[in-house]
Every structure is written in structure tokens, then in C-alpha cells.
Length: 142
Image: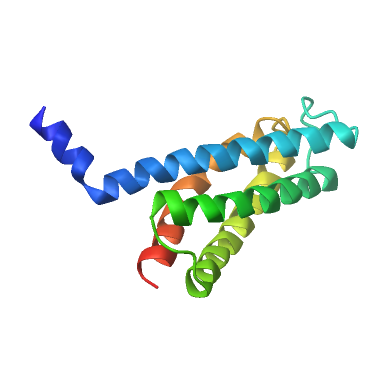
């Protein structure tokens, strides 16, 4: 029991837990927008059609909308910091790097004929740990 209390008192552990909560909210928003836009564009997102510009466009629009919510929640809830121009710039830079990683992975998975509904979830397995390190650096080191 003492060990669990020690873990829960560790600021980095709790930051990571809050990061995961915010990330789940942002990811859910992003994924819902992505699937909705694929549906609006008439793309059969269950078929694994290969790389398609509509999937990239839907992913990008969802990413930008979720990014705005994510930035506010990350500042206030995850790291309990005020959002400044410097922190916001670092956040946006870290997410620009993350976006390039994600869109590259998305198109790789789509080119490998993974289903459009599954590809973003595979992307997250790789990008979430990378993103945590980048965002934490932007909020704590700047």
C-alpha cells in the first residue's frame, strides 16, 4: 500500500496519467471526426482501399480540431501551467513533429492495405509515447 501511495505522489507519474486522460479525450475527438468525415466523403473506411487522399484530409482536419482542445487541456489539466506564447509555440512545434510522424505512419499503414478504421489506432501505438516526451519537454523545459 505504501508503494502505491509513493507512486501516486510522484509528479511525473501523475502527469503521465493526466496526459493519458487528455490524450484519450483528444484521440476520441480526432477519431470521431476522422470517421465522420470519411463517411461524409463516401469512403468505404472498412475495406482497406490503400492510401487515399480523403483519408489524409479527414485525418488532418480531425487532428487540427482535436489539437486545439488538446492544447488547452494539456496546459491546464495535465501540467497545470499557464498557456504562454512560449509554451504554446513549443506545444505546436511538438505536435507539428508528431503530425508528420502520424501522417507518415497513417499512409504507410494504408499503403499496406490496413483498414481505414484500424490505421489511426495503429498510428497511436507508436506516436503516443513520442508525443508525451515532446509535449512534456515543451511544457517543462521551456
